Length: 309
Image (tube, helix red, strand yellow):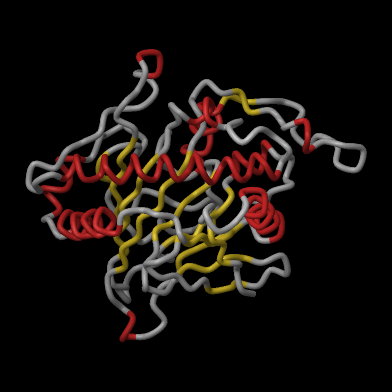
């Protein structure tokens, strides 16, 4: 299987054609790859370098930024906490979460503030810059999906403008022969759409509809995107949230630290998730007749992956 690589350059392609390519890939694979996204390369590289610097700090310094009781939603989360549903062992990773910095007053109690790292100059500011770029790109991706679903291009705009979106910096260390578990066990994402900034390192695999694990090749020029559970629920499973994992290195030459930077696009906390009417018909009755708020949906899933109790 080869995922389609879709140009989103609107000076060369019609918006409706881009939306059809993305939508069909979301229906068939739950994943798609974009190019010509216009993200600033230097901003991405700056964040990647800051990520390495942070994870190279001694554990006692990193733990200063661990928000106890914060459900891993901001700052540092150490090894041994997050665990994929039904996995026997925690994921072999540590990570940092950076979120929105421009909350409206009514949402202040929904998510904690971002942490800054005193040991690394311009850490918070640089992450803010990348967050803003990815937030803008996420809105553009969702406008294509809206068109594909027969909605207005801006349908998602006022539903994600205060979303609990997260920029995650991940460090998967070299595999220790005494440790159990995968770098990231088989899981689906919670959110609407995930944007994974490219890396040359292997490891990402997705489960196809024949239950085969397919390696996904990435590089620094493309962004791998996937449907999350919130979008699958909104669309009555027309767009599918696909199981994926990050496998351990297969040989000694690949047994190095792996760094990853996914951006999780979330709905506003008070948005009520109900099936979009264009995704319901006589052949596709509503699978989810009972709605749920985005905040409740998120908190239920955070409990499942052991980030909160």
